[in-house]
Each structure stands twice: as C-alpha cells, then as structure tokens.
Amino acid sequence: MKSGPARVLESLRRAGEGTCSGADLSSQLNVSRTAIWKNVEALRALGYKIEAAAGDGYCLTEAPDRLYPEEIHARLETRWLGRRLEWFETTDSTNRVAQDLARSGAAHGTAVIAEEQTAGRGRLGRSFFSPPHLNLYTSIVLRPQITTAEAPTWILAAAIGVAEAIADSVPDPDQVELKWPNDVLLNGLKTSGILVELGAEATRVSYLVLGIGVNLNVDRDSFPDEFRSLATSLSSHCGERIDRVAFTCRLYNALERVLDRCQSAGFESLRPAYEARLRMTGHRVRVMELAGNEIEGTVIGIAQDGTLRIEKDGGGETRVIAGDVTIAKENA
Image (tube, rainbow, N blue to C red; front, side, top):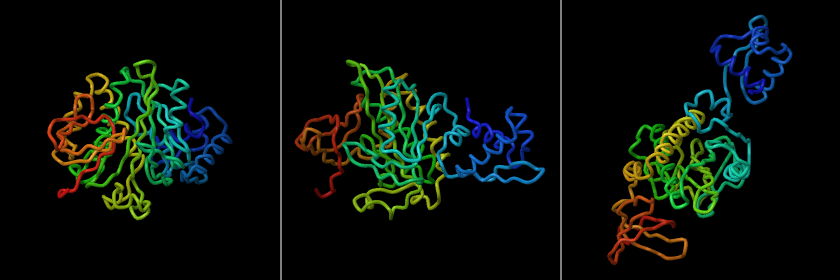
C-alpha cells in the first residue's frame, strides 16, 4: 500500500497546474485534513515545492532533483524492472544492498538506487567515483534461468541497454561505443561502468546482481586526477543538465527490453548489436588476464559465449574470458 505522502503526491500530480483543496484530498484519500497537512509537510521536507493558498488548496510547483521511487514510478514503462525500488540517500554500495536483498528472496527486477555511494565498486575491485545528487548509481536483482557458464553474457547484454539509453540522451548517438566487456564510452571517454555478481547453486544461477553507474551531471573537473583524462559525463558532453529521473526510466526500459531478449533468445541474438558499437574491432590491444598472462593482438570480434576474440601477433586466435584490455598505441 502506498504511503500517505505518496498518495497525496499522486493526487497533486493528477491536478497538473491546478490545485487540490484540503477537503477534496481528505475525501479522496479518506483521511483527516490534519493528516493531509502532515503529508504535505513531509513532501516539503523531501524537497517538493507545494504552494498553498487560503481557499484554493495545494498546488505542486516543483519536484526535487532526487531519484525517489515516486518520481521514477510516475514515468516508468517497464513490466518488471524497477517495480520494487529501494532508495537510499547514501549507502556504501548499491551492489552490496542488492546482494543482501537477493539472498533474502527479493524478486526478479528489484532495484536499488542511492544518491551517493561511500564505497562504490567497479570491475576487478576498482573503486567507482560516486559523488552525491549528480549521477545514477543503481543495482538490480535478476533471476534468469541460465547456467553459470552463460552468466558473463549478461554483462554484455546489459552494456547494450546502457549504451542505448545513453545514445537516446545525447545529440550524437554514433559517438556512444562499447569497450569490452563492461564500459560504455562517449566520444572515447568512459561514462558508465557495469558490474555483475552472482549467486549460484551447482551449475545454475540463483541470482545475478547487475550494478550500473552512469556519470550524468558531474563536472569533469571534479573527477579524481587518475580519471580526469579518461572519463566524462553526459552533461559535460552535451553542455546541459541531464534529467536524472528521465534517464533512469530510459535506462530501465532499455535494460528490460534487452534482458528479456537475452533470456528468450540468448546472447547470440544480441551479439550484432554489441559488435556494432564495439569500436575495438580491428585495433591492436593488450590484455592482462586475471591469471597474470599478457596477450597482444588484434580484436576480431565477440564470440557467442561473450568472450573477446583476438588474433594474436604471432598467429592464431585466442579468446579472453576476463581481463583488463587497453588499446595499444598505433606505433606500439
């Protein structure tokens, strides 16, 4: 059941630029006028601007720049993704919270959003820069019917969804590209990272936790020194502020579409879309595998199982399951 403030907010939204009298709200929601006033005050404390005029009632004039569930659900078009949404002003890691929820039986599509992370994590144990109220930090509980061997392809499928959401948010969508396996680049600079962690029983996946961070409104000059030359944000690229709620809904819609496709038809059905944005193809790369082995060669594409296909400098093809990939300098 929706909370009192959420029900009042819904009524105020329906009124648009008009007003809702306290008496009408009291009658609609079957609560006292004192309860209506308390709910309005609770909404104001959350940052909503609600004007009140004697005899006229209440009018919602501005919503805060926060990723509240009520804001997202008012625009969300998904069937299952994000329909249960846990919001935090701050947390250590949305992936940690989502893993706890998954272990407790949270349903497929349960999402976690935080305005700030104090210990945001990226792939290979790296930290993820997570300043408050500027970007999107979200983790989603997934319960696909797949084997553990198929799990790595879901990070690639998710990357397609993130890339599509970013491409729909910028004036030059052709500049959105993928760097295997989990980075989304905008004009060659990283704007999003993706992390997948799983729970399994024998060879079957019990759950996946899909963590996504997207740089939306952070100023490039505020990035840590080690990231500044490598990363960007959508607002820095576009020259205007990004509507974070609209982007979140766009992302959830795109993710639901591609993940449904991945479940029903496998990653093979999505591989052309991934390779279309994989600008690494044809470039020489250097790969440091997790085991410490270094491989150099030319990228020739993505295999059906999501591994990176590389033609080695010495001849022959090898496939990389996991590792850190950098594009080699042209004269290397």
